[in-house]
Image 1: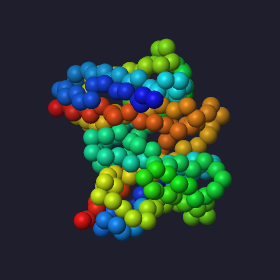
Image 2: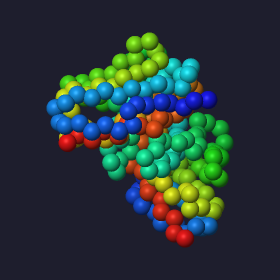
Image 3: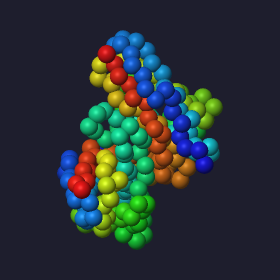
Image 4: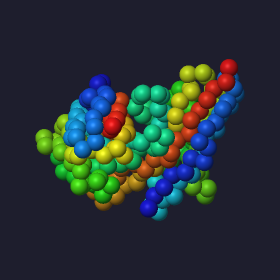
Length: 111
Length: 116
């Protein structure tokens, strides 16, 4: 069974630029999550989708972050404009029966 | 609000020795609990999970964890560590809500170092 796929794996941008991350969950998993993991910390939930609807986006900085899951499968997370403090690993996870499985993450560096 | 505390930032263990990583949680409802492991540059790999039933759960790679409701703890153990166990370990808590399962809250992690 293929795991959660994410791209790109690494991205370097300058502050105030925009960036987008892509996630393809495990086939059949209705729930999809985006987490932000800052160096030295545990992952923090940004947004949770159930199929193509948002379940929880209470910790998403909506002035600059947006996410969508239009067809209930793939998802994109966008940051516009990026700030230095957005440097982190962005993890996508999917679950079917309450157990999240994580992708390899995208490491973002904002200069 | 729910929270997870992993009191040990770093732990150093000799190869072949036993291991215990501590995890305490704060949550109003009945939690479900996880341990994940993260190697450098990798995503999170699930070691084990607890939802209900037997409070001692077995996981992959020889790990086990015990849920103690009275102590709000879910400590991870391994009887004999291998050099390949060196990694970052995360404890996480979640709960069921009216809309299904909510996202997990993670601790800050414990960095495990294995001495030869």
